[in-house]
Image 1 (cartoon, rainbow, N blue to C red):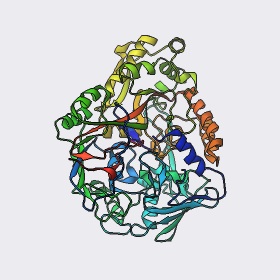
Image 2 (image 1 turned 90 degrees about the vertical axis):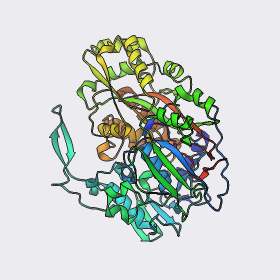
Image 3 (image 1 turned 180 degrees about the horizontal axis):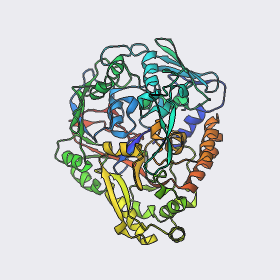
Image 4 (image 1 turned 90 degrees about the horizontal axis):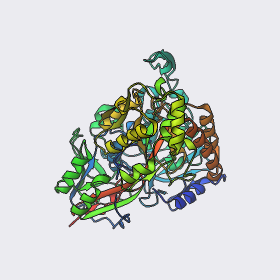
Length: 590
């Protein structure tokens, strides 16, 4: 799950993705991914961004010695360990410090075998996966990367008492249920009965996933509860990174100075709200070693401050230039680019709150929003209006899902009046410092104009992104809230199940922050996931989408675009469809 801050990290071209995922979902008895084959197979704080699309730089052969240290902008991460990182800022750092089993091509987003795995194959249609590791990989502390490095990391993330934020990514591995705590029924603040984990009195039956088996140091197997032909495509995501013994010895200390196996390694400790320094890893075993001395992640609470530092020559890269400053940056900074993104911004409803439990009210608010006007006026046409939660770059995208996610002010007013409208104060939530103020205000203005909502009833609550996510996860949001999403891997399941399945709440390691629950939706997702052929699965995902659209747990707003700029101190700057800098391509400029 990759929650986006508003810098948009994360697009492959649809045709390429269709070919890739179809190849992985052929339904044959032998599902194989080998080094020379492109097998088929990440929320977002989210700035909102512009410029002519930039071609990714050709990757030069790495020089014998890295050259120059480069600085780039991020917001304050929430965490810095793979087990607890599901947002864009922490992921940006971990992607430099770690390398997973597979990686994703910077241009096509196809899975590629430039990571730790030599091959990942299935001989039984996706129920059991055989992983073969390349020899010679080590962590930054010199310890070897082995089968146990992955198995131990995944067991930790799946183990209920650890409350890892990415636990849901392991839910289909055999034995996951045995790692979860029992529950008790308690009452929430509204007096509603809720099930909460009771790890103290009802601990898990097991501490390890029965589906993970180490054959030897370089071979392990993964047995799934049900076949999943696209499982291999997941395995480049942050949640599946390996962990050294240093993590298990001191998880809290590890967050301050992570020990990874990636092209860069931490230099010092995480200086909260200031910087995270890294240096090139001289012993990197991957295909794209660092070509610069180091990478300094400069932390800013507001993207405008980062842009000011770029304009002053004090910061080398801003990978999320806001639309309102794009012309200014283009006129002042000689290097500018854009690239496709898989991101979407949406307004969610806290359906767990009785004030927002009525789908008719939610539909009225949704149909009263003119996304076309917002993307034209606020974003100068640099965003694409969204009437679907799923990104257009993912197979099975539909431009329109149902009327509730379309603009129809007359129908919206009729629905709004039928439920009595909003007569009490409401709060609209969004993360600050990422360029969301104008478009969120525009939404409220449209509600006032199209529905007659008294704008004096509306107040706004904002938080820094790292402080915003815990409030969402704890279901303490009291009104409509802004959030974004960018793909973790190129598949419809990554949007529909992770964001709306009732079993994928933050408490269960998922990203369903709306609290949406519909058993028909969940069952349809299960049907779609069970299909071996993506072409058979797509209609089922679309049926699930239609169910969600009728219930309106959220309102799709707009699809993103990566807009970035950099100084002459650096070359090779490109932001991929996941919203990530291509770290291996960065070279010293000049």
